[in-house]
Amino acid sequence: MNKVNLAIQVLPFSTTEDKYVIIDKAIALISDSGLKHVVCPFETVVEGSFEEVMNLVEDIKHSCLLAGADDLIINMKLHAKREADALIVDKMEKYS
Image 1 (cartoon, rainbow, N blue to C red):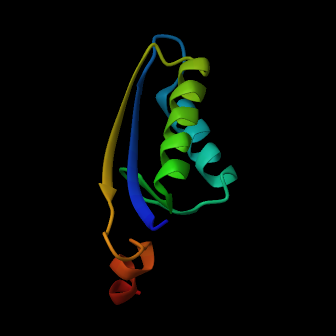
Image 2: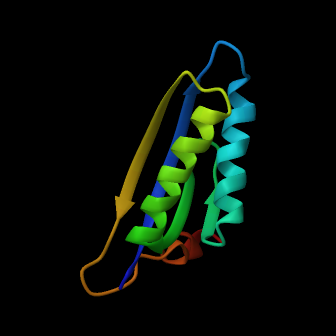
């Protein structure tokens, strides 16, 4: 099973909670997942199997709604390859 990259952008809307508190909960879930990830200013990129990253999205959705989001938009960009892993390092190493 090849690894994929998933860019996840969480946009919570809440009348009672600060949006950054909710976003921080999403980032904590990603960090606690054990999956390789890179936090960026507008999104976080996660590397893992398709099933792992999609299960993580479900956990993020559930957690953000429980944390006080009245509405939640999760924007995602998926990179997958037919014959190889899609790796974060392949996209970033030339900038290091």
